[in-house]
Image (cartoon, rainbow, N blue to C red; front, side):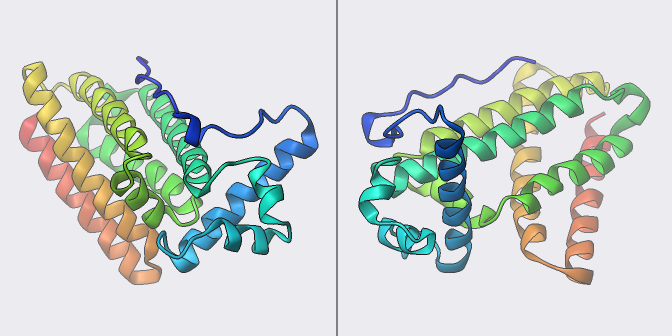
Length: 212
C-alpha cells in the first residue's frame, strides 16, 4: 500500500521531548486520553491546557514539559487517529475483494471502520478540529489523500472500470458520505444508530453497484 506523505510539524506542534522511558510514554498516553475525554465533554473552544493539567492532577508547567500547547496535544491525538485509520486500510486491502463483491465490501468495510470511530473518544470534535484549525489541517488533508488513494485501488479490484480521474471522484464522494455518517453513528446509540448505519450501507451499495 502506498503511504500518504507524512506532514512535517512546525516547532509549535513538536512534543517537548521524545518519550524513551516507560514512565514518560505512560504519561503522554494519559495526556492524550484525558484530552480526548475533555474534548468530548467541553468541546474545542473550552479545552485548555489548564483544564487538561487539572484533570491529570499535575501543574501546567509539568504538562508543558511534554507538550508546548493544546494544539500540539491535539496534533498527537490526530496522528494516533490517522494511524488507526491506516491500520484499517491495510486490513481491508488484504481482503479477497473480488469474492466479496461490492455488497460484501460495503458491509465489512463500514463495520470495521465504525469500530475505529467508536473507539476514539471525542471523535467528532477531534475531526472538526483537524479541519478547522490551520495548525492541524495538514492531518485532515493527509487523511483524505490516504483514504481516496486506497478507495481507488479497492474500486479497481471490485471491477469498477473508470479512468483514474473518475475513480478519484468516486473515492472522494464515497469518503465524504461514509465519513459524515459514521461520525453521526458513532454519536448515536441503540435503534437510531442501527438505522443510520443501515441507511449508510444501503446508499453505498447503490453507489458502488451503479458504478461497477
